[in-house]
Image: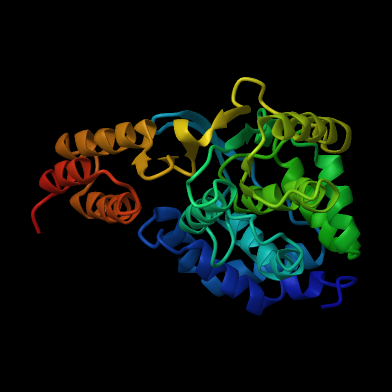
Length: 334
């Protein structure tokens, strides 16, 4: 693909229509979607003209606090802006995805938490010689990643692959709509995608410079498995130095530690031990809250059934039979 002139493809009516269909997925009953659809073609043409004339400006983000049970600040874009986000990502994602490493697991087609779990199990068996000897894990977390990510560094990384000035200008518009000099808002499709673009630099440093084999990253959480605690300590120092000098971010000191695999590693929603896997306490608490909301009529039966289906798909990968039975009993009647 020629990356010198992507903009016309991004803003085309065909791409905007496909982006609209993606943006409304799972939200067809929302009032803001219905209002946009009342004059769908006209609204898409207006968006197309604004983008073509470069007069497009995203609306201010709507920010709210989400407790699920971890407290997070979510910034939500207007629906028409989400269409622009999807239009942009539809075109530029293939350019970047082919350079991402195999074990970058989040927000990618064919990857995800299940993929990460399977890779963890494969690596665990390798470093422990099929669970016959002790090994260790560097479990790392980047401090305030979405808030602290440096946008100028991100733009430089993007420009190495995308030479189209209008496209990078649109990316700047989207990024700068977040009212800070640094960081990206939690809640945007573009933030999820650019998180991988930014940390692909770390992936390459780890895989190609440090030559680390057993490495998996899921957004800003990553693990490295190895038979030597001392080697992991050395790598941890080098990784932290690379992050500070090249990406202007740092490891979370309290959350980034080296532990024995026998103690269990908290990764992608599970506590992963040598011979079994348990659900993370935070996720159990979250499900209990959803059950309470359903019992208090704060969420609909339809929504709860959807939540329960996701929960059942998630829990089947753990060794938590009694806990799974407990939630099955509490599920709503059909």
